[in-house]
Image 1: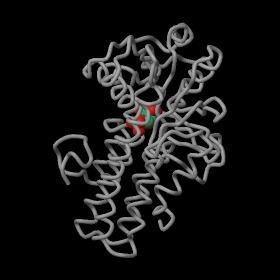
Image 2: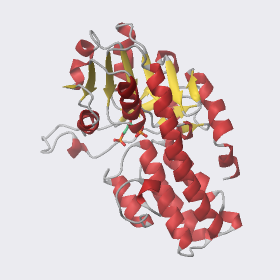
Image 3: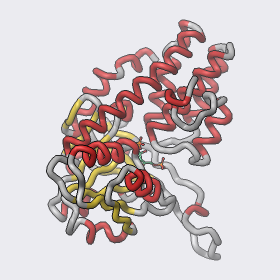
Image 4: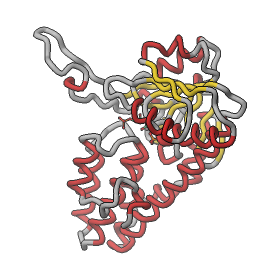
Length: 304
Ligand code: RUB
């Protein structure tokens, strides 16, 4: 499978062990990319003649790498829905998932850009391809005066966003997370990505997102979310049913301090009623509509 289908490097599709390591170490990160990476690895395993038990076990191993982003589970389920029909079908479903996921991302960017029409200053948090490509698509049509990017502790994924946007020619301002209130004195919208959308439209995304939405509400600034509909989790009634990943304390504090426990939750829940609109591949929607869009777009998951 070539790079354009899974987009990490020029390498072949990864083995399951390699993909699991890439995802665990965050060499491959972001909800959509981890789903494509896992799907590609399953496709490779199927092409190597693995049987149904091996494929099922590999799917479980990949799902266990990161618990919060349902995209990963949905990608694996989509691919393994072909198990009863043999490894060729699993391989074909892996390719179809990656292809459709990339096409969905392009459409999300177009719809995300529409949400940003007429805005001079936008703000974003973390690194989301869906949000970043929405900002770039909008800037290509109608240049921004500034895009404010929050650092996003502890992993500082905001740096990746800042670089990506600057490379694309956007005027980027980089601020620490605690400056978000100050940033919202100028920003006219906030737009972020998503790891999981619960059935009621709550959004689970990088830690700090919920605070951004709260600060945006206080500043009377619309808060938008961009993402592919395979990030919907029909099994989570609300965002609080989604497992929140806790990562290594060393990501927060390299040298432990005696008597201090470092806690490192890396996602949080933004309630649906703070989200002005979602940009999905099928258009722009109220958060409560995402479940319907998922069922219409990814109905194939039902057979998984
Ligand atoms: C990344 C993050 C992103 C979503 C969406 O967290 O929270 O906003 O995953 O990303 P991490 P995308 O760095 O821990 O994976 O739009 O690229 O799918």
